[in-house]
Image 1 (cartoon, rainbow, N blue to C red):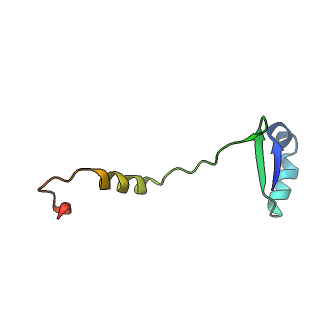
Image 2: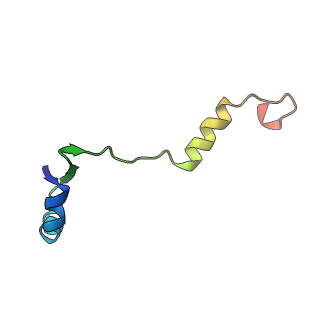
Image 3: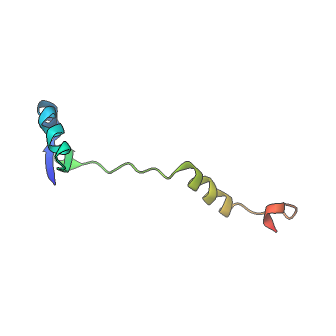
Length: 64
């Protein structure tokens, strides 16, 4: 996997796209640091987790 700075990536975008099309993996860094990948919890998983934590009402049909 290659690391390339953001400024250099701007200048060589066509080349980078060619590399990626050929299967090369790239990490674009800013000031020498790679950013964290953004991977949010899917909405439905988050809702299910909240429902598991919520207290059950005694008359709730789902609690039975």
